[in-house]
Length: 580
Image (cartoon, rainbow, N blue to C red):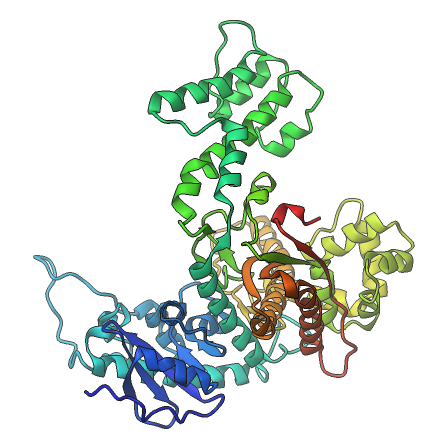
């Protein structure tokens, strides 16, 4: 095995190029149709400049490329496409290989220790990545592919093998029966590309982090729980002080542990308030009933900051460079949403002033409006609901058509997507079925298919697993109840999943189009995108986000259908808290 320099750089734009990073700072590269090579990682920049589409097993490779100073423009992430095709959360190499080859997932081999009760099994040539059973060898799947340059080249070659199988599986989606929707998925290959791009964005978010003003962050924490404690005794005194603000509203000598929900219920019972639980929304509804409620709500907010977003959280997740980092994934399962750890997806509003642009930069923040009903219009192809999306507030034309208030129209539309058939939107729901039969039929078909245990697919092609549940031994009533729950989940999943795919397509376009302007995506939060940009180009980037949204809507338009209008609330801000 020889490290080759300079002779491999005649790659063509768009060429599928398998890549695996060897731990010795070299990389295995194989351009489709050519022999694999080991090249210095430093030379990957020249291959990237040729405009290839990298093919890798997971975003771990993307992270290694970013660490080496390479920002890939195009990629195919085998793990991301597997989640799309199979609807499985597992996307390790063993599962990716098994799904691509139609092998039994229950028989995927795992490494077993050899001890007194087990013995080594001869599985043939260990340098062959495929075992006698057709599965990927578990030691290869768990990292033994990097044991040598030859193995690393083989790993890159296998990535291209699986990519071709995934291509064929994506093409087959368009012709397979679709009991879960009245129309076939739209352009699943394009969804695979945007899902791959989302994983690349996740790798960048992990590497770059979210700009965070540590001084402001610590000041906010101090406002809730006091200055940073210097000793354990100091911390205990602070906790006692926080508790006293609540307990002073009780008779002298009465004490409760405020960190125990059962004791808080007993506390409230002591002052004449009976509640089934102590959730925040329930306590909010008790404002004004007793003097203890306000301090108890303040205590809860302070306790959440202290335990989840306090000084230890800042110390753990904010680096010396002033960036808040967590682990990102491009898909959380059936819904397909991008998710993150380290509180990046549930940071309380009180902490948002600490999320601030770096010097010379601002944040461009855009939040998609009424995304789910607009996605419903797009995926169902309902012409009347599509026309309603041309309004800034699409609930208004729906309300006019149903002859109800905007509030009732909103409740009815959301209820239809969540399977809610009772309440104040129930009568309007019947009006939706009459006035928007295409959209309601789309949801009902998904509902019925899910009740029957049929797997669904989103409009983008993501599989939603509804099969495999066993109702044996259950009463007839329980079987019906369980089927109804599957139906509600199914009708919502086809919309939530499609909305997530739409968002990721939009984010991928913003990343691609905004790179020339120095735009850097720093946060993807459900339907909200936050981009850090140089101050001088803020207006241009804000307009770009709108252009990319229009382009995404056009790409998502079903054939021979008018494009659905999507809207976003966009603002140029210095701190996240300034967004309205």
